[in-house]
Length: 458
Image (cartoon, rainbow, N blue to C red; front, top):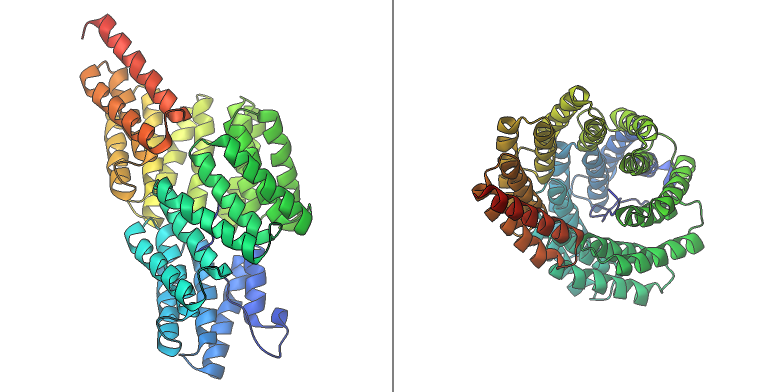
């Protein structure tokens, strides 16, 4: 994932004690290093010590609960994270009041947990409430208010509500520029988030300008070897890859990878992300011998650090399987696609958008093999999930419609294919504009089908 918006904040503190010496401080450090197994006992110790020292209803106890919740969230253990976040929120509401800034932060944490799980209807009102509290308690131009704007905008972007996301991202950027100045790391984060939105919409010129500015800020303020600089390099590389500028993308991916391996370590999940991106670039260029070991290396890292049943592990399995499909190694691809689907259904649920993506991948394999009877129910299920989870007007829903249309086209059932092509095209034109690559793709698919239908006289 190249554009991350942080909804859960690490909570650290303590008077008279060096931060690194506290269990909370050590847990946070290990968490940032990707050493989750080592972080957990320290996070649990921090909660135990705060309970003994401060009691069950103290804000310090709530902070420690939030830190453990974040650890569980990163590992995909949402059922463990949610009660901790709710408990922390209850403490803040009881002790500090429902309109306190710390209560707002805790609301944002719970909303972010729901967002990750695709429970957008639960996340949105919490994000909105957190924003309203911060605007009242801290003011409309406070940096923490900007964080809430980012979080709500990120939710809207995920849902394809780009017209709602853009003004929020812009407002957050304006706040950061006003509060911190144009060359601050937080300003760079705002630039990156807005750039990611523009990239999604196919506004590549706007995205590139912002990505480059964010990169320049991070190189200047944080240094050329900082992990955040690596993130900026990765984002810009991804944009170049999308535009087919593979030489530029490869150079940036490699530099980003080198920074992360040094700054975070070779076994950090963020390092695995760069490996996947570089591998995908090689696969796109047909350099399969270079791509496969990188995909496998990333998968090994994620299985080791996050576990075999994590959503990120499933994504990595999907990546390797897709490579095998490209190479015609269908017998290797199918079990990986099925394993990824099983993980996502278990971790995120049968109705999550990521589960739909996994269904789509398996269906595409069956189409490639001509197993249309196996592909159709998977495409239909993926479409139903996306319509429910993302809405009928989301670009991903349009892609599912187009996939199902392609299936019918391949079988010569043009009367079923044509309305789906047209529906997919209408959605994308509305959401992304007439010049987006997906719109052009759908136009060509519809025109090809209509030409073949006329030739066939159907």
